[in-house]
Amino acid sequence: MAIDKQHILDEIQRIAKVNAGKPPGQNEFKNQAGINKYDWFPHYWVRWGDAQEEAGFARNKFQEAFERDFLIEKFIDLIRRTKDRDKVRFPVEGEMLAERKRTADFPHAQAFRQQFGGKGQIAAAILEHCRARSGFEDVIGACEEVIKANPAPSIKEQESRDQEILGYVYLIKSERYYKIGRTNAVGRRHYELAIQLPEKANVVHEIKTDDPLGIEAYWHKRFEAKRGNGE
Image (cartoon, rainbow, N blue to C red; front, top):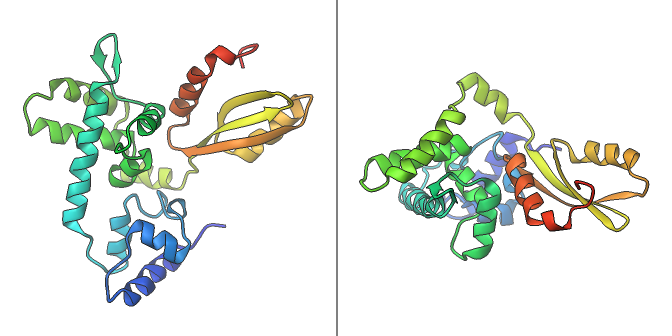
């Protein structure tokens, strides 16, 4: 059951009162209130600072500026190491997850979504950063391609998107076989597959994401040597 927006604001204020008026950070709020990020992101707020502000507190501008520049610089580095035929391109979320596993200080994909929003908004923020500096022509080109393919939504479209359920990439096991796929409703897809498969199918794992196509492609490529009959 969805958690009411006002309840989240009330909890921010309650915790702040205990902390001498200081609003809780995202992790502190999760620990103190037992409310996870996906109880408020992205349907109520895209950034935690927006929630703090709506609850009546000033966001930490210095910390947000530091985090913003740090995230942009890390993403630029990844763009420059993500290439197709020697041309840099914008990485998909699966490649961000892989980089997170390889590099200890690379932020989780959720950190970028929380700070900037969707893929187009991330590209727009990086583009603004690079245009104010020299030597980033390769990154500018990669970002412009993403923005062209992902135009900024109108206010009405954004409000509609905020109400949508994020997609899922799932791993299902049936007897000794596994299947990787994507859907916007894991339970429904599990039911459909259970009808089609001769043996009982169980959901082993699921990933909630705003880039199900990219995540699915990453994991299919990761295990393509083990495919049987196209699966």
